[in-house]
Image (cartoon, rainbow, N blue to C red; front, top):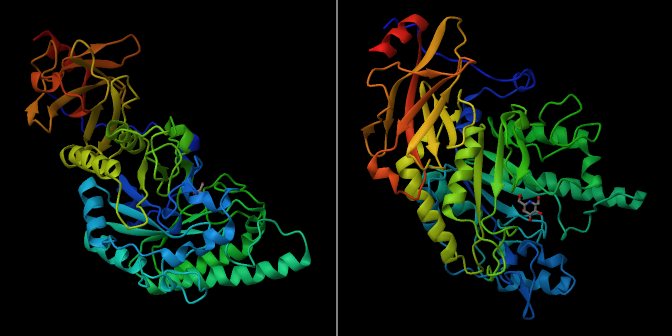
Length: 473
Ligand code: FHN
């Protein structure tokens, strides 16, 4: 067979191609994570979505803003915060076993409570019965486990007296200046205290008051980046000078990657505009912090979360699954079970996820495909009733050539795949538009499986005439 070489067609649209991306090693590492863990933990874990016997079905970490929860009672909760079960190494081990390559931890949520002993406010872990830093041990334990750490930081801070959501008067503006200095101090403090972190994950930046600080936030961003070279910051930190968020007035992503996809995955590569992106996903519907009661909410299954992770990577993004430890520092059983199941699947099939990105195949009914070098991974979520996975391969870039599958195997069960009607490499069926189709037979071992499985294929371009002759053999 005349080898024309590996085919590589980039089917990016013009708009996708125009995205400007960081090309350094830190960003490449971020791109290859595939799967992450988010942790929402703070004093809101004590009420766990309930107050005075009443269950609140809004997000548990927002309970302070619930009418029935008196603000002064919420603001005193820290006096009880003493998470005896907190064990940073155990948390890191659980994340590692799930297959997470990065972790995002809430240093401060909208309530303003700091999980590190900040010297700029008394509302911190240092003044709880627990007294000790939480952030430091997490950074150390996760980094030691090979998991990169990112710090979540909410710009909204209901505890700081200078915080405003809008600035209506001169007095507001004056007060807000104190809040800006406080915010800057805390961010620099976090980077000084925890230089091992790889990035910052901002939230609560939709307020008009913050959007108006675009120029100041831009210079703060530069200051932060100068402290930790390679620092990664998503599109939720600052607006541009015209007030645009995520994408600036020129249509470019603000900072390093797109943070628009919260609890919602894009459907196509075009929707991502070619930007780097992550999707942060809750296990129940919209609960990030610990909620005592999950009976009223839909709880996603490991299968669904795995599907989201594969889909995210097939569209060049990362999936980050959120966990909400309780007030003692333990995880609910549903979460540990889910993490275990996902980990089991990832340890066998992770090759199709880690550092695997959008493939040259179009989206097909059996599931999603990813690609790493010349390997294309077909991740089968919808097993055909006839146990034949029909794979459509694209037309090659070169005229007079045809794409053929030269290798197809089931990596987990270590079996080569049989392709219907062939026996010889390069046999194909083509439609009138020149696309080739293959039927890959699902072996007995996988016909009854209830979890997704992976087929690894390699394509080559061959001379069209040659390929026809092979088909006659
Ligand atoms: O209001 C928060 C919410 O509590 C949670 O922290 C999520 C995580 O991305 N962010 C905000 C909503 O966008």
